[in-house]
Structures are given as C-alpha cells and as structure tokens.
Image (cartoon, rainbow, N blue to C red; front, side, top):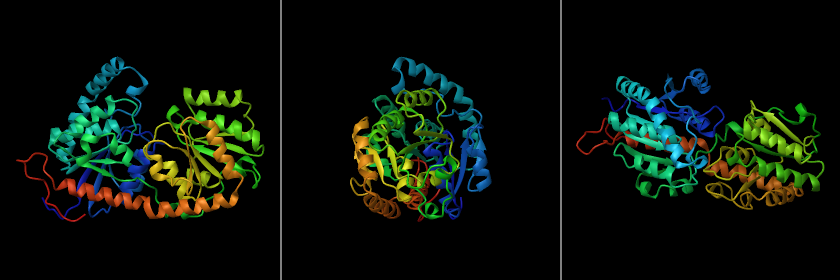
Length: 408
C-alpha cells in the first residue's frame, strides 16, 4: 500500500436529518483534507443526507438498506431491561445481512479505518472492525441515565480493533472510565466563518413582529430530553412580567411529545404568544433574530445549538448539566440554571431582557469564545489526526498495520 495515498475512511451513520450528529459528520467530511482522508459515508436509503453528500461531493456514498435508522430500538432508559434485550437481539438479527455486505465492501474498497458516530453506529463499527481487522474509532454522542448502555459500549470499546474513542466533552469521556486510555475529547463546535456571513430576515418579517419586541427562543428536535415543556412553563412566567415578549419554538414538532407541548401552550393561555415554526430551512438566520436562546435540556453532551447561538453573538440560558458547563462560561457568555427549574429559567431570561447592554457584552464574549475554542475546523483537524494515527496501528500485535505512521 502507498502510504502517501489518503486514508480510506468508512463512516457509519444512522442519524435522522435534523440531528446534531448528522450535521457534525457533514462538516467533518467537508473540512477533511482530501489529500489526507478520503471518506465514504454509509447511510440508510431513507436518510435525507444522501443527496446532500452527493451534491457536496465531499464523500463517497454507500446506501445500505439493512441499516437501522435512529429510533428503531427504543433506548434502555425509556423501557425495562427485559423488554430492551429482545428488541436489541431482534435488531442485531435483522442487521446481520447488512453487516456481511459491509464487510465485503470494506475489503473491496480497501478501507483503512472505520468510524461510527452515535451509539448504534459506534457499536456496529466495533463489530465490523473486529470482523475485518480494521482499526476502528468509536464516537458515541449520548448521555445516559443508567449503567447498561455505557457498560455495553465499554465492552465493545475494549475490543482490540477499537483504537480510539472520540468524545464530545470531558463529561462524556467520564462516562467511560475504562476507556480513558483510548479517549480523545474533541468539541464538535461550529463553522465560525460561515456564521459571520450576512443572514436574511427569518422571523420578524415573516410573522409581523415589530423590531423592538423581545424574542426568546428554543431550537431542536421535540423530545423530552430537550426540555421544551420547561421552556413553555418559563415562557408563561416571563409573559406575566414582560407582556411584549414573544416566544419561538424552532424545529420539527411532529409526534406525541410535540402534541403535548402544543396542548401545554393552550393550557397556559400562550397560544397567541408562542410560535411553532416547524422545520426551519435556515436555522442560523432564525437564531440570529432572537434576543435570548434557551437550552433547558435534561441531558446533553455538547448541544450544537449552543455553539450556533454563541457564534451568532447570542447569550444563552442553559441547564447546568453534563457537558454544557464546559461550553458556557457562566455569567460571561451566558447563564446556567438548575435542570427542570422553569422559575430559574424565567428569572435568568428576564434578567437579560432587562439589560440590553449586558446581552451585547455576553454575545460578543460568546462569539469570541467560539472563535478561539470551538471553531469546527479545529475539531475536524483533530479528528483527522486521530484517523491518520489509527490507520498506522495494527488491530492485533502479530498483524502488521495496513499503513505506516506519517504526519496528519
């Protein structure tokens, strides 16, 4: 093998269209040096990112019908262990033909390194790396409320084929103490330069809102972990003190949880104050019009919306939980509040709405923090280094590495 050729990387992804993980992978592929890393994305046939990758031309695309999409297996924290295990075993059985096909593709395409982002793809990559003798990078992105999920991933991470475990925050890494010798922490970040471009109006003109009306918003997929219900209850408290304020909920609100949030808005008498936008084509333009961004999550590693908001110069009010305090400089770039405390969220938002000069100072400090520490190009370069390093390592001591080490 010519070691001057780029590393052939296969990335497994089952993320839905709006997930931060899917966007992270897309940015990685766009920012990798094509002379150093040549990625192939393995995507489910229904994944909307298939066409995005093909249009961008930043990665080869392999469509695999047998892959699981996110949500196929209900997470263990949402059910009992006795119901989870049969579901997981059934899913593994359905994926077996796909695993065998991918093993063949790995050999045919002469793939050097495998990587899986999020839990299911990371586990699948570990299995495929073991079957094919390829160095593997696991990139889990979840937080956990039980011991079973991290224990299962830890067992896979201890396989010899798994050479590195990339984590999005120090908190995330702490969930896998037995894998710390393989762990590299890389903050995903955001493309800082992209968010400094002029952005078109997205909210005030479309919804007929005056320029001096305070706008408070939340962004992301509608599910319980994101705390949309906390936001709505906080909005009721804010509206009582700041009658002019309007509230935007940016993101796909379909599903049972979204229905419950609509019902809560009606119950609290906020139907004329809260706007549900549904899927937003230009999330950055929408975030740029908000005065305060709220991230009341119950569990988080490193939410993309915090990087986006900070890069746009917006102060955030966020839960003081898991990886979030590593991103938000308390009192300088945003305010941190206890989890599930809508009164604290409301008080923090009102504090910022009452002091425009402080909001501007926080926003500028937030923008600078992203530029210095959380630019996605910095993260992509570090992940590229990890990929090139892994390519030079053998899966087993008696097997020669497929490539010799060279600088990333």
